[in-house]
Length: 318
Ligand SMILES: NC(=O)c1ccc[n+]([C@@H]2O[C@H](COP(=O)([O-])OP(=O)(O)OC[C@H]3O[C@@H](n4cnc5c(N)ncnc54)[C@H](OP(=O)(O)O)[C@@H]3O)[C@@H](O)[C@H]2O)c1
Image (cartoon, rainbow, N blue to C red):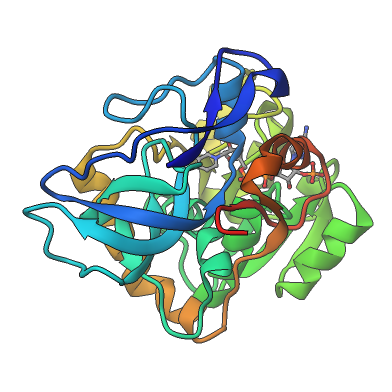
């Protein structure tokens, strides 16, 4: 297989594209011929040596999400047949033209959705859905505030919030990003003065510490803050008194480190509540840019730059 590897810890100088033997599917796995793979900030953390691959995933091949075609099934894998178009989450090793994945961690790509858009869906929509619906318990008539609204997870969260019947705000720091928020049916607010403009039942934090303590000011009584990303800083000072007075809930969550069963349950909830909207075109995964696999370094540079509109993908057949 052709795959992106990290030869050590650092910047793009440790990124190479090499040939390796294809991986072998385990009993409950499927082997996929990957068409597109999505890039994630976690891949940059792994490149820097700060986020090692979990047990069972290749140590030096990054990549958390793919779309492609089932090429072989493990002896106990029953959900798919060879030739099925699928997309989903891998614990690592996704930046490769072949990857093995537990059969519970992929879903069929609906007719009418191409593999390019499908690869932009898993991390963004699964993370967003799990955070705002399962952890945050957002329901119709409530207000959702999404920080980091123009990125992959943020643009998915805005749409899931709108589909729930919530009033949705997205915080951004450029006019282009504000327009994207409007295009997705939500209202843009500034990254700096949101607390004076919004009272939110659920706040999805994709940026990190700089939004505290303003997040507590913007929180409605009995509101829920769900922290999913801390790229701008993980440490803050928080008034426990303000938490008590708001009867606030603070949740933190990660997807990658979860058990096979737990991740499978996240996939099934997504299939029930989100995939029909994507299949019918009521929601869409935003693709910021697509790079050939050989241009992995340029793709990582784009991933790290501000002002993206959705996901950065690698094309393994282009
Ligand atoms: N916990 C989990 O399981 C999980 C899963 C997926 C993602 N994540 C995390 O969630 C975060 C978002 O992921 P993503 O894929 O959506 O990333 P992304 O596409 O790169 O988007 C990042 C978003 O954050 C904003 N942002 C970045 N730095 C900022 C700063 N200093 N101040 C204000 N806004 C800032 C960006 O705005 P600009 O365009 O203006 O820079 C953009 O809207 C990342 O930290 C990622 O690691 C966690």
